[in-house]
Image 1 (cartoon, rainbow, N blue to C red):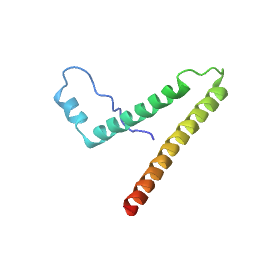
Image 2: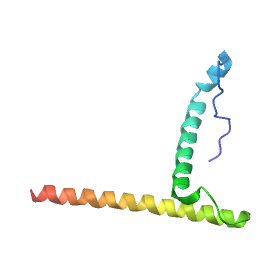
Image 3: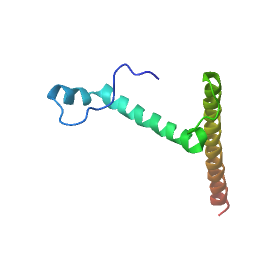
Length: 96
């Protein structure tokens, strides 16, 4: 997703125009999206994408793509486990 405006807040004392800009709906939404992206990047780094042993842009792109696929597989697995646990709880509740 591309943002049309800069969403990084300025540090220090803000002018009134800068305060007003940072309180707009677009700015706040952009900051929320930025936080979500940072979270996703951190999850990839924790699971092995902090260093790329390959050299060259095509190798780097392949490495990143595989890391994203691995992370998505992990998320899907967690989702399936949660569904299974909920189904088991429902069966146990019906049996009681």
